[in-house]
Length: 443
Image (cartoon, rainbow, N blue to C red; front, side, top):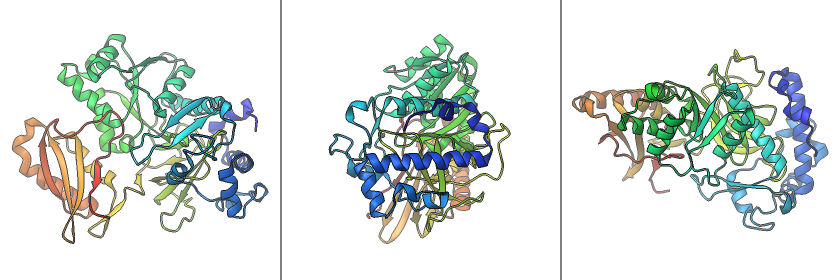
């Protein structure tokens, strides 16, 4: 497979009529399927065992016959020859020019190999997001992270450069030094996790700096956690910084496949670079109608070294009923990613989605940004504890707040909670992904 610049980089792709866009997706899926079948021992065996050959893929219905893969399978592949990627690799090792790995928040990290072409196209897909969010060559873009081997902020860095932004890497600076550097250089935009965006605002205020008044940030792109599409969390971030906050989603294995544009109507799926499917969580049947929640399955249509074909992301989402006012033909997800299938769990016989708890907690201005949910078992009974931080000026409102929290949580989740109030600033904080839901029941 050779890259055709017009086919892959033409900006008209964003407004292609649905019929032509789907024709392009089917063509590219057939190409990447054939490439993986012919060049990867792992995929060849997977598809042969399923009785599939490249010529069998003629329609979207045929695509649904293709076996899905998931992170646990990729962990099982790696560590073997060609080391360290294993036989999923489709190119000679000498053609691999970039190494990344997953963050490891859900287990052993997965290694990701990219060729130069893979990385260029991955950067291009991130450019779609930043451009849609209003990033231009007039922006001074601050990245408050030491990049290490985690992919997200490398991609943001290269994409911003490609758009002509001036990029400032925050690197080994601590939070206070990053804030001072942003102030000194008058940075206009930044990218971070929602947790760190809120944490930086807290730190700035402790330093006597009011972000909306004393800093110049007007655009923030968030990724790595679902908070960017949680209305109450987004409002907290936008109020704290006086800036517009845009959500962006992807993964190391797939790439950056979804983003909000300036209209903030939902997440656009970059259908020029990815095939995105929603499936019924229980039956696996395809979901095409809006409003119904399903699990996310994504294929990266351009990745050559280590293809990711029909990857079960473990996230859940639902199609939006409306098209975006921006005019793009890429479909929208209503409310972004709305949970994870591996986070949704039964507590006291009720299905619980942790994002619902986040919406309740973040909607109360008397509470701090951090919280924790701990599920344990007392005898045969499930027990849920919610730990929240109380802002000091509201210490006299604990009883009223406890009642309000209990009522809202009962209404939204159909469950009762033990509410613990902690002093502001005492719950753990993180720069990167934060897992606030802890299931400590014996399994």
